[in-house]
Image (cartoon, rainbow, N blue to C red; front, side):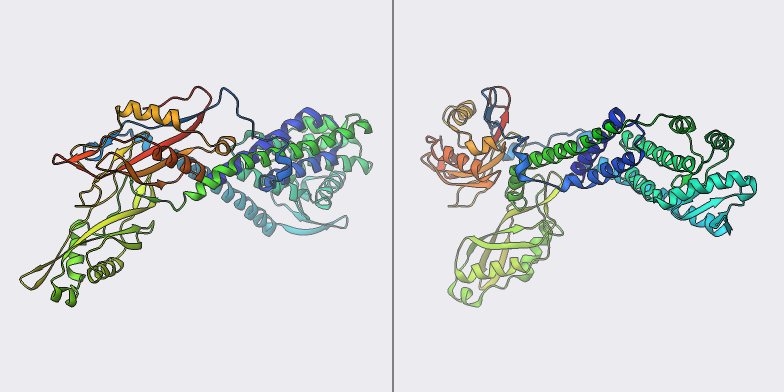
Length: 559
């Protein structure tokens, strides 16, 4: 959808510029054939130029500039919040409406209605042809209209009510309409109609349609006069047809509105040949538009690459967690019904808790099933097998879109008086991350690092000291700076019992350059105040989003 939106903007900009150039330079001359080719070139070029990107031209209007003093890199983190005390915020209903999607679908709906109208006009022409009697007049095949409708043509079909016109008038009409047919003016009309269907929201497109239709009439009028028809008689003939109704809009009508302009053009003095040179202005304009498109493509290319890297990113924290079909109770029932306690493990009295991790894909399927904490290969294998056999889940969502999410599932294998007893519980490693905030995410896993503790670990000096440390020590990568690469890197690490940091990794990537810098600065941090559980220092997993953003004023930390 976003690509369509960008295409529409580019095409409309091009059409608007071409129309303005026409009004400024070409509207008052008498180079009618050149005007026609100008309109056709402008329309075709505007349709296709957004697809042309020339790397060499992008250097002419490059968006890459050397860093200026007033542009600074900003790295920000928010106030830490312990996961279990996060409350759901009330959101304004207007903020939840996907306005971009609403705009796109509204645009497409109106476009579809106009397309239906266009098809109906084509059908109307066929209907009129079917009702009309074909006659040969002055060696030309025409369709006799039974109603008082202004004469018109559509490609080689000429429609005239022969009984309401004199012989001289019929000759004038035939000269006029045969010019339309011979020069394929109907193709121009159809192309312009399609343009209005596709770009209906641009008022300049409708004005261009009117100017193009008038120019086709100028061409046909000029051809009539070149056959020796008296211009005054011809103009009176047009005036007599002023109040007759027209058939449909997508045909070449013998009498159209703006009759005054047509008469003025017939009597206008021919433009000097030297003024033809101004039509060469279209060439540098086309080059400029292609160059601007190439430069724009160069500007957004790094952002596209970064976005591409994140297309299949795996979330640990999401706004809406994935769920087993039927909920938690249904999942526990599935595990109890489907796990087969390995006989060898029963004989050896092996029991314990196997912690399995997997990815819930966008379509709800499970992948990358592996054991995070092993008890015994026998139990591990059975736990992986039963997870692989699960039906599809309801996928997790982030900002309304289905995303891939890591899920951790502890499975208990316990023997009770020689009988198999399986207990299962789930632990979801996903909760809401608020914008510009980082969290301590918690899970009690015995010897594993804690995700939830009574006393969360803290950077020495508190949140303000952490923010200051990050702003003072992060160096915005030069290449990322030049390419205008920005984004949010979510890192995870373990705060050890002695306050040191370990197992630093990137959970959500923004760009490889930003990822590397975020990891580097975390590795260089001093020891933290460790977390506590039941009065004892424990290892705690900590998630820290770091926002890399370029702005024009002084860098600062936004809470």
